[in-house]
Length: 126
Image (cartoon, rainbow, N blue to C red; front, side, top):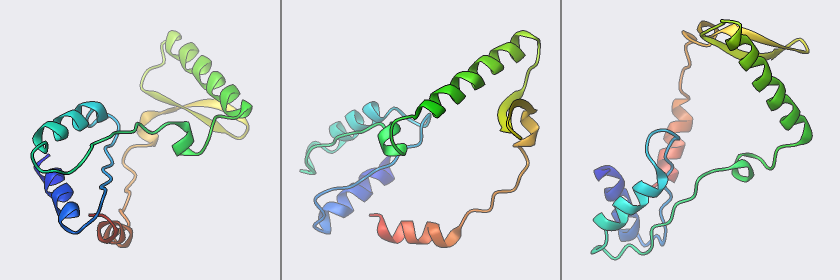
């Protein structure tokens, strides 16, 4: 949180009228983070702190009929498999069918971060 405060203050000192902070889902509540930052920075004249939770629009638009049908199929399939005793699985769409896969299928795959992209994001950020 201290680093976030420093970045906001740095942006202000550079003449920027805004700062954008992205928080991954599950890491912290956007509302609580905004409230904490508002309290901690109230004497620093940084302006209003707002938050926005990403939804369908920011992620690419409202779900289509196909999206809703697939979500329903995945949900029903997952519940049926769970009730039948299957555990530790994920639902996938493979060769035109809804199937279950062991969770291990998605584990252990080495995902190498794109360092160049990280560096560009760091330069463009505060």
